Image 1: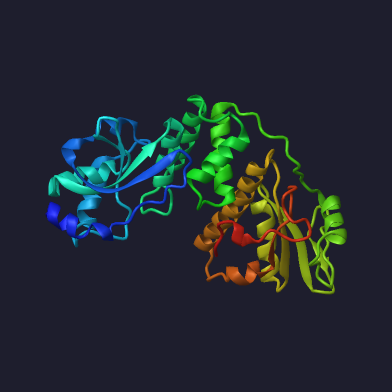
Image 2: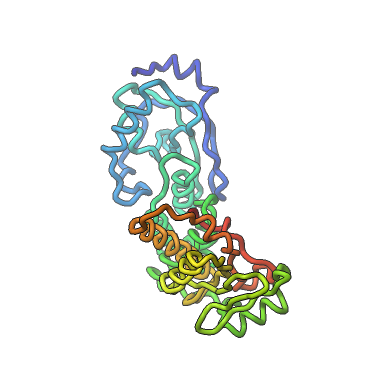
Amino acid sequence: MKITKKYLEDNIDKFRKSDMPIEGVKTIGIQIVHKDKINNKTATEQFRQFSDDKNRVIRYQTSFKNGIDFDKPIPVLEIRPDGKYNRFDGFGRSGYLDTISPYYVYQIIECVDDKARILLRGRLNCKSHQEFNTELDLVQALTNLVNEKHIDNTQTELEKAMVQMEPHLTTSVIGKYVQAAMERLNTKPVKEKIWTYNASTLNNWIKHTWDSTPKYGFKIGGNKPYFNKKSNTYQISLANSYVDRKMYQVLKNYEDGKKTEILLTACKFNSKSSLHAKRQECLNDLMDWMRVIDNIAKTKINWKEIFSGLLGFVPQEEDEVQKTLIPLDNYKFNF
């Protein structure tokens, strides 16, 4: 398709701007700009790591085949003191736009400093858009913020920056990326109130703190699952690193007509961020284990029924409500 300047002028009110909730960034407005006024050399400084602009141009050819999608945010330019513009995002899109029109509609912004620029590049690529940041993009952005002295090299500052760039990510994923950046930057972890459980301390939490303890009781055994005669169920705790061993027992219990109730915990973590990452690791191991069993099973397995006793994670840090389990919905898990 070909786009004329008049078509853009007639439809300029239909184009959608990106949200700019970053301190130090100001939106000037929406303007139609000729490609000769745009500096594309900033492509070497673009946010994405190992970006493949040629393949993205091909994808844009397909997406523009039926006309402009006005629901998608428009590309962003940063205005310069000389009245020209630096391309801020949409490097792949620009490669295609230049073939269909010398003009296009852009959101014009001003940034007070490089810190605002780095954070905004991350925000513009976040998961509310069709193309999104990779883990490497985000870890590199956090590293740049610290190395260029825009933020202090602390866990708290890294977490704040991640939330600004990717507000839609779960706590566990944010924790994973922050942890990766901290390892790269040798960041000193915050001394936080976190803890693990053994059978004795977990039973103590069940008895004295948990506000939803079943009427028939709940108990964690030592080296083998506890069998509750009142409910006719086995009861266990399950942590990351122990999935294979314990889940084979759960499957055997199911085959013997016995349900297993499971309290999830985490182990081998040293911060709140890594706690959430270990919880997700536990669920990932469960999903991997199910896939393996599905591949070797001769009959279809009803995982929903088997996991009907999967109750949730026990609280293990100070900011969590201590009387209730952390729901699985806070993490990525499906049957």
